[in-house]
Image 1 (cartoon, rainbow, N blue to C red):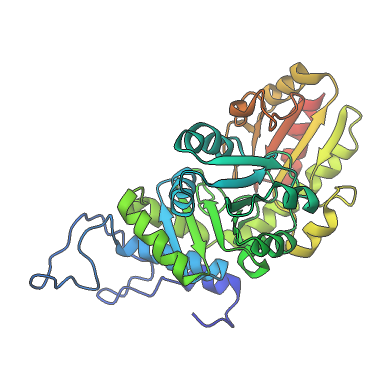
Image 2: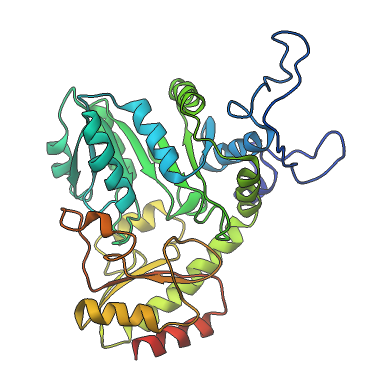
Length: 382
């Protein structure tokens, strides 16, 4: 599409030309595994088998590439499938990666429990400390810098532009997990990153009814390698899942605005409560990396974490007392969720350098009537 089109226009139209046969304005679900060929080697538009190419998945992939400003998007069966395919494309036994010291638990598990057995080492580092990142690079061995910003669940912010410049000095490929921000709030490729990874389950899908993942790159050489591995490894998005994510993307911009509006009011409530000992939200001027977030994000997102007086038992009690905030893992849906990361999404990092505080509560703030959310959280806090 024209680069002059706005984000909302691209979200609704990129990869979604009306069906040439019927005129349907929504791309059809091509629930098909194989395609008739016009003679040996005569695949129509390259369509031969849906692991390799499927029109519904292609529509999603083209839309994702437009939204992130990349040359190619690739859709997968889950965010972890996307991450695994990416890392096995970029890394080989004997290589090394640098990751955040507060990365998502599933990402840490992939590095520590899968890639290490394959002979790939990793070093967790506070990405806000450029000197520490530089010191962690092992020239000739370090091949990937994995950036997550905002991080899950500590909501730390990494300076994508500064880290990309540093990593490229060492020939290191820069990967940014953009799940928390979404392409509506943050554009990592424009800031110097090489690849963006998403769990499309979250804000892109937006309705808690689909599991998926995606990669987007602005490097043509890397795009071809990623496509080869996507096809060879086969963890692709099914056509119905791709269709659901594409449907969610059409309303991404309006949903993200409401997520941000509601989150900001939740933060104000938490700031007024005596038993809340710390609020982790990059929109606060007191956040240690607020200035970086303000520079590279459009707004500050719908994720809020906070710590409570009374320790782990109190944090669990708050999680159990809500009514509108549903106790559950995942995030980014229209409904509000609450969880205790230490016992839920980040249990896999217990005992490691990435262990999260036991008194931490994480909110995925939905798009409900904000007064109802405020009342629910107030009564849960007591």
